[in-house]
Image 1 (cartoon, rainbow, N blue to C red):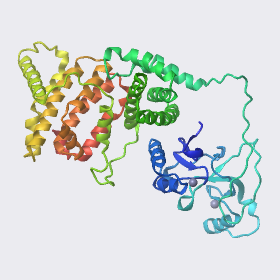
Image 2: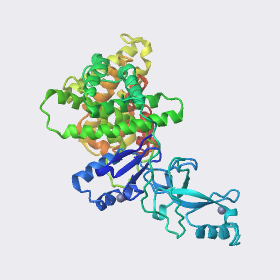
Image 3: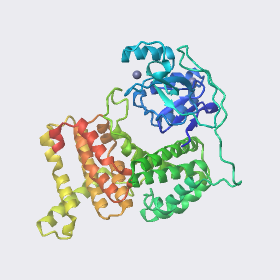
Image 4: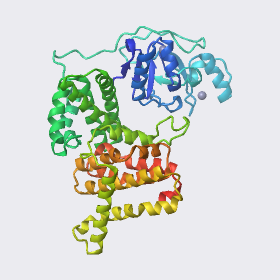
Length: 495
Ligand SMILES: [Zn+2]
Ligand SMILES: [Zn+2]
């Protein structure tokens, strides 16, 4: 897997495999916390630095202690210097040292042996590399490619790192023809047109979604590299979700991350450009929907990490807000611009019809509609149960916003359960985010318990969308509920 290069003169190199970002000039990996100062050191200022930092923010970077180390049979990492050192051959000990002096000390301190002769009987010369320097320095053994000429520089002074060296490039297979076909990329493209395009929702009309992704978007992507990268990123991500094997999944995820990086650079450029031409407007729209799908997938599949509250709220948008904003960014139109009164009227009409029909042997609603009935009954009584559990609300604006959000949820539930089609379920879920009053979003941002309880009910719609085929939401429901559980005491959660 080729590493990704970024920055002026390809200064930085990202390895998705190890989750590290290496400075090619300095020849070591930069810790996340030192990134900004490191870019300054290389005289990368203002806009350029911000742009670079936001690209880097899309990458998964591990803390030094969490970086997996290559196995001893791995080839050296190009961007890092190769150091001659020693491995201790004592049984069960795998200690690596860059100098013979240190190895002798290791032998006497750890193994209690101090015979100064016979050095080669307990060590083996090896080639070493390290991602980080200083306190995070950790050597790993590598096996240089046999074709590469490596100058045997013995290096015994305790200085762990050599100056940059010139190495002959690894042998490349002879070019068999002038046609450059990347079969891997074509596979992703094929998967998109034949499979993924059938699964994606559209912002406009659910009926046209397949045609939109299979034809309109593909044609636009064929004329714009950045958009094509977005398309391939979605396809790779889809294959990762479909994979049974963890290794295969990881490979697809890494590819997806690489495509995503190039896509988001182009997308940002397109978004900042002044666009008067209609064609560009279309490409921008497609790009916006791709960003949303990819971010949802990323959000849902990322390792679960509790909000640690290191940055004081609400300065940092919480994870919940971030997924809400992402889905809202998809650009689903709510169809009609209902006023709040209309939403309330609509909701109470639905709830009244519902309870009437429940009383009289299901009336207009088929009995298979049980989940929806239960859910609506639940929502109908939610305000009173919340009032009991949460006590007297702090202010009327909160009460109004909460009630309005519940009313909108009633409406969206009915839409969602009307069909098992992925596009419909997606729209119903996304529409709620657009219908809720701005004040409700504000309540979520300050972790109002009432708002979070309502949000937990919305998760049912997310679950339905996932269940109906929105694969890029896989895992998101669990994560949403975990996030809410973090903020809401258990007895409120029971509501
Ligand atoms: Zn550097
Ligand atoms: Zn040892």
